Amino acid sequence: MGLREGARHFLLVSALGANRKSRVFYSRVKGEVEDAIRALPYRSVTIVRPSLLLGERAELRLGEQIGKLFAGVVPKKYKPVEGSAVAGALVRAATEDQAGVRIIESKEIA
Image (cartoon, rainbow, N blue to C red; front, side, top):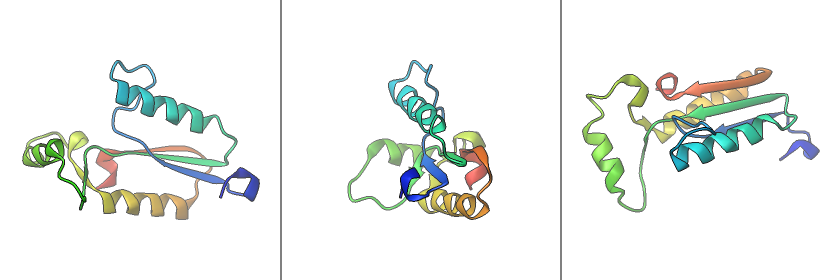
C-alpha cells in the first residue's frame, strides 16, 4: 500500500551508520535511501537502524558468525540484534503512529 492507496506511515529498515555523506558505500546508499524516503509526503516516517542482524538464515554468513563471537565485548551501540526484535520495534512504531520522522537506533531496539 502506498500514498495513492491512503498509506500515512512509511517504515524502513535501514542500517547503523547510514549517512549519505559516508565514505563507506553501504552506509552511503542506506543514507541516500533514508533521505529519499524522508522527502516523500508521508505523515509519519519511521527509520530503524539495526546493527548486525541475527536470526535464522538459509545460508552461512561468515561475517555474522564472527560478529556473534564479539557481541559480548562491543559497546551497546554496536551489539547485534535479533531480527524478531527489529520486527517488534516496527510493530510498536506502526501502532504508535507518531507524526513526523522518527529514527530508532540499534541500541534502542533490544
